Image (cartoon, rainbow, N blue to C red; front, side, top):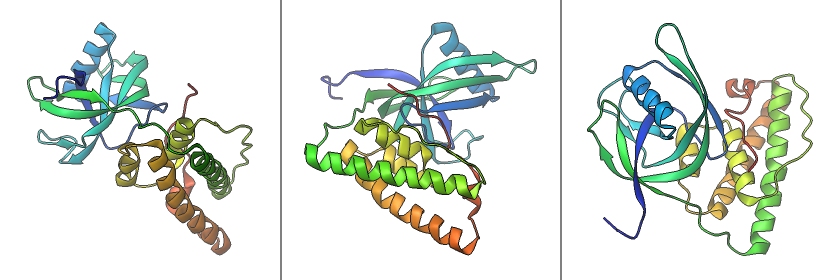
Length: 229
């Protein structure tokens, strides 16, 4: 193990969704192993890692997570009479799993921080940011039209990371594509990938609008809320 890299132990919550930094995620905690984990996090005021399941049954004992996840901080919790819990979390930073630990009823991991690489050429970045902002504005408007809503977009973020994660949260795409975005090495790669995804999604939604035949996923809004830094 590379001793120059800070490695910490983090309890892992294996999910069927992808959490991004800045995104809020409500969870209903009902499995005993995760109830134990969350109780410990609350008692010790610590966070946990949210990771997408790669293989296996979520309710089973043998499940394998993807190696890149997001640290989830609990900002609100409530205990229900049946012993289950409702919590609201917010993603804070990405991490990469170095080694899985199976010494508790719930899975833990030795993880390292996985920050985004520094932005590339400023001129190229400015063009990517402008393009993604325009595309995600169009995308949200098309989704709103499909749901019969009127949405006024007053302000979009300017910072590259905020733009990238906002688009990642808002996009109604499958988990594999979301996980691919979460695992990108740099913000440039995230934005460039989102440009291709938004081209595809906006073309599909525009075609569906002309045909008056909206896809099922267009009936839903974004999967989370992006918080400002």
